[in-house]
Length: 450
Image 1 (cartoon, rainbow, N blue to C red):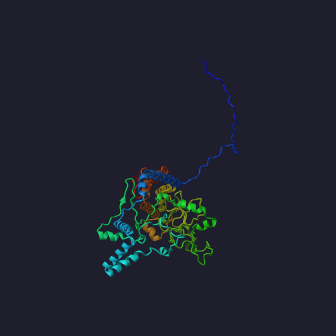
Image 2: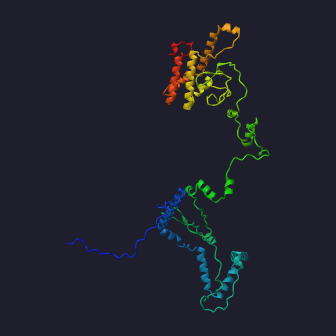
Image 3: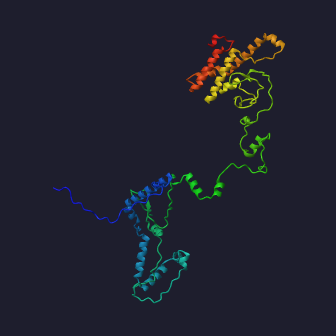
């Protein structure tokens, strides 16, 4: 058995064409059309709405056909009586009609007859002005009896008799009033009412859901696309001060009342908070005196040494400038350092804790030789000499540390349960060690500090 068949070559009509290579050597980048999520959601909702309407239309086609068929109202009693009268009068001869008319006029009261004729005249009045203006055109040719469209037999005199009033006939015969019928289908939520003259219902469009309304940002973008540059600049709302006569007056930064004029010109409606702007005021040029009246006024550098009040702040490299009280004085007080030791900035907190530890060590060793008290002779003899006066001053420093809760602040910073920063804890432990090494308050004894 030969498993291999003959090889047959096929004729190729056209050679395959090669696609043109892009000039860059890389395939073109696919850039999808940018469509907002709101627009995609709206298109999906419209598609679902059209699908549901199509399926509902196919399902309700038999019911709608039944509703769309013309509803023929039943013949009323007045119409039936009118039809009988017309048929009977057309079958009578003119002599019979004249005799019946004469008998009717003789049997009726003249007043009643006048009222009936007046009512019939009102019914025969045209319904509108246009109908009254209509003119009856005469035919071009005379009618031939027996021709198509002509009346044959009987009398044509009473062919257009006025119709009877349906309500009056029903009331005279005692027929109860029938209400309009309602047709309701199970698959439809709407009720279709049989249409009669005079029954009109207003159709209001259904309100659109909230999602069918474009978001505010989309509306702004669409509006900006159709605006030119001048309109866009006019539409941007910047802070515009009230135009007064002195608006173009230039402000001088060297003016002593510069802050007041700046606030009045550009921020007249905002409250004036002078305390928050105090740090921007220039430093007082008054030279401080070299005397210190209280230990709370003593200032220290980062080494824990006392800074004299008359020391000038020549640069910011030494770090003795600050924005606290009395910014013209260099250095930091014990109260300010204790406040900075509670800072939320770890680096600032570490420097303050380190400085407090060095101050506590020097206070315990009483190594501040710069303290030179100025007292009179009576106070000198009363306090017991220079050593007693220095001890009194060091005691005032320790009282200040106790009131400011410096030791408690350092203990809290060294506690790992309350302080998570490792650097802050290490600096606090080192400061407490310096406090112990210095001896602490000489009035309480060394045993209590260990």
